[in-house]
Length: 310
Image 1 (spheres, rainbow, N blue to C red):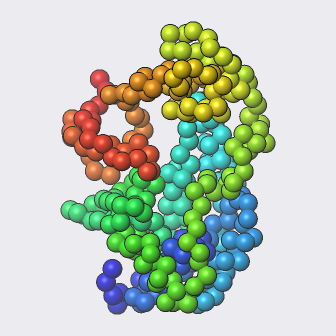
Image 2 (image 1 turned 120 degrees about the horizontal axis):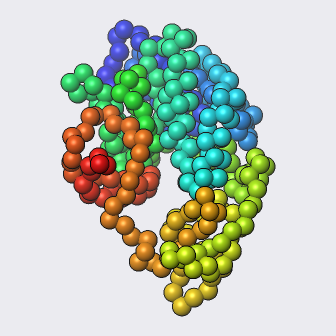
Image 3 (image 1 turned 90 degrees about the vertical axis):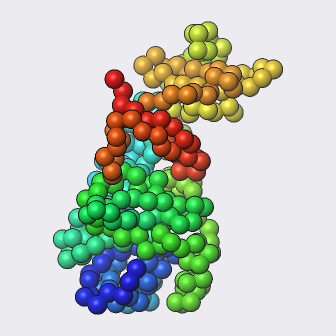
């Protein structure tokens, strides 16, 4: 990022963590007018987060805005999370939140406050080619978070900047110490933010999802046991089935319509073809093309042939 002589006004999505803190500091060093924005969400430990983000904003001497998304977050993200499990699907709440809340509602709230761009602490790169914003991986593959931004539209990408796209995490911690923030401990949560360590079955039960026992069957329909509710299982799961055998059983599918968990042996897990829907393309693809496909955030991308379903 180059020195800015026009004093462009940028809103930083602040969490009180090391990444957004360093992002705000880097932008200040380059003479941007920086405002911090903190989302009020229905999360455990919110008061502790508020204390952290206020401390950061005070030390950096930047204005701090609070935007209340408590209701819309519950309606759009938490509801999506719960409904996915009841349908036998594995939700991806961080991806949906980045699309609808952080780079959706928050981005618009920043614009209403006069911000020209939004900056986040994500590790990824937005590259402009031929007048179009494209999402690319971070320079450090170990920290790449482009997966979590995969549903942003070109219009959203055009309004977002990712200052840490070329940084390594160790350098971010070092930078934080240099600017007077030595207290970051390097621990990062891997939990869904609104769970915050809470047991998933307990969370779902609190939100009205009841255990409904049903059959565990093979792919041919042979009943081998009973399950405790399909939302407690995921494809590829081995543990917790309670079906001792010479070789392990794995969950190969979930059938919510018939309340069945379908299992098979290891070899039945592998597929050569899969179907996807509701894909967000930042670059219009050709009809048939060869590319790398990544199934989840820490999955190694694999070469594949991609084509529309007839």
